[in-house]
Structures are given as C-alpha cells and as structure tokens.
Length: 220
Ligand code: GAR
View 1: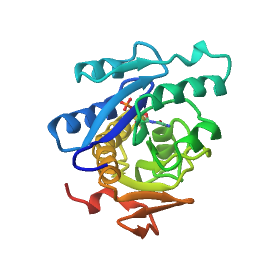
View 2 (view 1 turned 30 degrees about the vertical axis):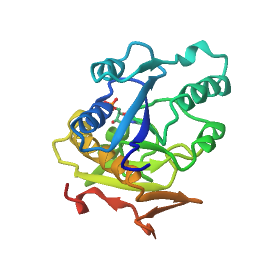
View 3 (view 1 turned 120 degrees about the horizontal axis):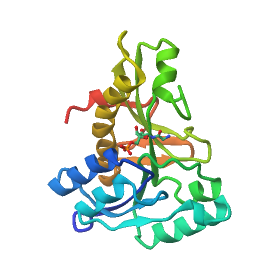
C-alpha cells in the first residue's frame, strides 16, 4: 500500500452493519485511508447491505444455506473475496464460525471485532454474561483471526464501566459506541503498515506488543 494505492478492504457482515457504517463514514470523509472494495453478507437482505449500497460500495450476498457444508461455503466465500484483491478482510458482526482452511488463507490480514474484553467471554451473549459475572469493566476487542474461535492474537481493546443499573441492552449500547471508534483505528494502523502478525504475536510500530493496546491511549 502506498499513497497512490489505498488499502483495499473487504467487510464480511451478517446483519445490522453499524460497525460497517462507522468504517464507510470514515472512508468517505477521507479520515480512513481505505477503499471498501466490497461488503459480503452470508444472510440475504440484511441492513448492512443497504448501507453498502447507499455508499456506492458493491453489496454481495452469499447465503451459507445454499451450500452443503462449511468447507464448500468457505471455498465460495474465498473465491468471492479474492476477486476483490483485498489487502485486509474484516469480520464486522459476521456470525459464522470459520474453519482453519479459511483463517489460514487470510492469516495476518483478517480482523474480527468481539464485544468483550477477550480472553473474557468468548462466544455469544457477552453483555449478559459480564453483568452476571459482576464485572466492573467490559468492552470490545479487535484481534487477528485464527482457527481458535475468538482466540486469535489481540490488537486493541476499548473499555467501558459496567454500571449498577445496567441491563444487557444498556451495556451493549455503551460498548457499541466504543466499537465504532475502535474498528476504524485498528484498520487505520493496518493501512498505514503499523500492524503485523508474526507467528502468534502482534507487532506494532516495529515492536512486539507485550499486552493489548488500549484505545484510550490514542486520542484521535
Ligand atoms: C457487534 O457488537 C460486534 O461486536 C458483534 O456483533 C455486533 C455487530 O453489530 N460481533 C460478534 O458478536 C462476533 N462474535 P453491527 O452489525 O451493528 O456492526
């Protein structure tokens, strides 16, 4: 990626696409040096596809239900993604488990956002589980994707307090606001060549990351 060629991004979604919207907004305004090459949903007709169309970005559907098994769906997904020649592929509310065949193909250039402070609360219902566990802090994580579900090397996290009056919806809303700052920042770092995955370790600005970056340390 050079000044002449923007980082090409493919975004995989399954639904609402509010993280996608935050990225599209920053790409359109020029704050984020990326070209969103395509948005792909495994669920037809979802809101995120409409958001892509509104931004004049190709909105593609690949319904996993049309494939007999996970490997065949993933093979078709790889073909569709690679046609876009992306530098970076991101999961933004993409709710399908991916096999090692897929994650290895995109090793070092595949991000996920997860709504918890990983390694806490992998999987679903993270906000409810954080409240039930009486956590005082919760948040969201961007990580490189590996075959281990929600287990890949962590890049950056955003933290929010858990308040006594919170229910899962109020907590989810507080986390989501941070997600919309978090994803563009991680993408920006990648696009600027500041982030690499080497083996199982994340390097930032040429140094091994001893612990996850914290969004609040970077005032934008
Ligand atoms: C986000 O909260 C994201 O962190 C979560 O799904 C939501 C998608 O919202 N992802 C996962 O739970 C992945 N395991 P969006 O479609 O409005 O961006």
